[in-house]
Structure formats: structure tokens, C-alpha cells
Amino acid sequence: MKLKTVLKKAITQYNKYRSPEVTATLLSINEKFFEVQFTGPFCRTCGFYDYFDDLRVLLEDFGTRVKVAEIKEIPEGAVVKFEVIE
Image 1 (tube, rainbow, N blue to C red):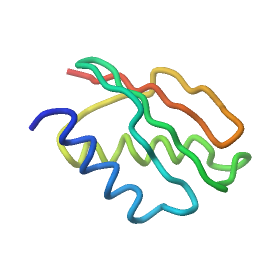
Image 2: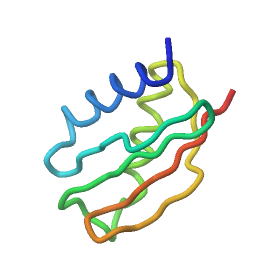
Image 3: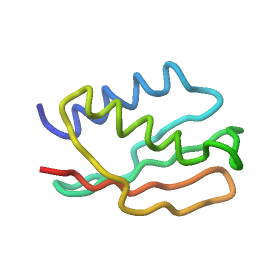
Image 4: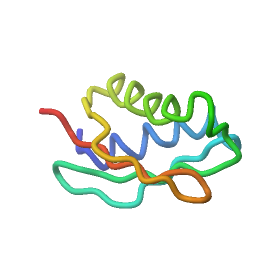
């Protein structure tokens, strides 16, 4: 399954159970990296990184292994760059 297809399905499922507390939006994608913006009123002091890890685990369920490569905090949440592990 193509990475873009997997990401769309995983993000749709992620948002189904976590939105409106946190909403994930795919910003960019290439064959090695992709960026997802996480926004919402979610807790930024406890478990902040768990939201990103939840998407990573969900992607594993879809057969795609990734790791967090970079986290950029923004006023509305964070933009997270994931690296695809082959």
C-alpha cells in the first residue's frame, strides 16, 4: 500500500478517536519523511509527546514503521516530522 494511502487512513482513524481534543493534519510527504500538524486544546504539560507516539503506533498497525525525527512546537500545538523506517 502506498505511503500516502496509509497515512490518510491512519490519520482519519486517529482523528476519529482523538478529535476535537487533538486533530492531526498531513502537511507534506515524500518517500522518506512526512510532516503532520497536531492542533487542539490537548494537554501540553503531561503526555504531550504521547499524542505523536499514538500516531506512530497506529501506523505500525497499518504495516508502516516510522520514528519521530523532529518536533517543532507552535502556538496551536506542534508540527512533527516522521521518518519512514524501512
